[in-house]
Image 1 (cartoon, one colour):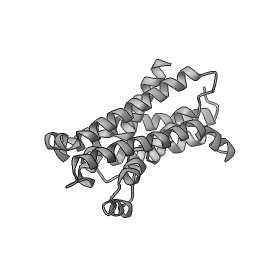
Image 2 (cartoon, one colour; image 1 turned 120 degrees about the vertical axis):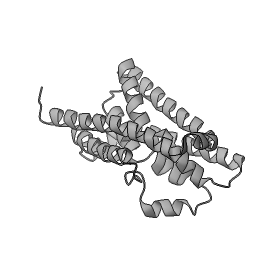
Image 3 (cartoon, rainbow, N blue to C red; image 1 turned 90 degrees about the vertical axis):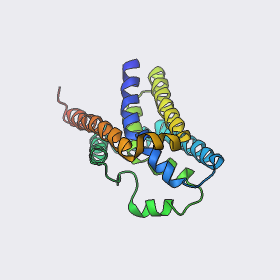
Image 4 (cartoon, rainbow, N blue to C red; image 1 turned 45 degrees about the vertical axis):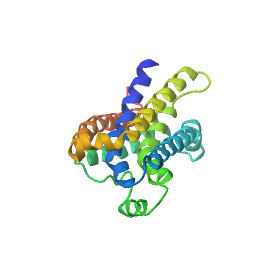
Length: 210
C-alpha cells in the first residue's frame, strides 16, 4: 500500500508539475496585492481538490457507465501523459493543459482561481486522467487503506502546490524562467517513462499477456 501511494505521489507530482505553475501564477497576478494573490492560490487549490475528489470517487463508475474499460483508458491516458511529457521536455506551452485562446482569456479575467488555475493548470486533463487510472482500480470498501493512501498523496501534492503559489514571487526571482524550465524538463523525462509504462500495462492487460 505504501509503495503504491508513493508511486502515485511521484506520478501525480510530475503531472501537476508545481514548479511550472510558479511563472504562470506570477504572470497572471502581476501587479496584484498580496491579499489577492493569497486568495487566488487558496481558492484554486481548494477547487482543484473538489474536482479531483469527485473524479476519484466517481470516475470508475462513469467509465463503466460509458462502457469504457479501464485498460482502454489506461492506454489513452498513457498516450496523453506522453504528449504532456514531450511538451515538458521541450519547454513548450502545454496544449495538453490549455489552448492559446484559453490562455488569452485567462489574462482578461479578474478571478483566475477557477480558470485557468484550478482548471486546466492544476486539475487539468492529465491530472484527471492520472486520478482515474489510479483510483479506478481501487476496490472499495475492501481496499479502503489504499484509497486513503492515494488521497493522502494527492493532498500532499496539492499542499506543495499551495505552498509554492504562496511564495511564487520570491521563488521566481531566485529560479527564473530558465530554472523553472530546467526542472520541468527533468520531470518530463520521468513522466515520459511512466507514460510508456501505462501504455504497456494497458496493452498487456487488454490482450491477456502474462
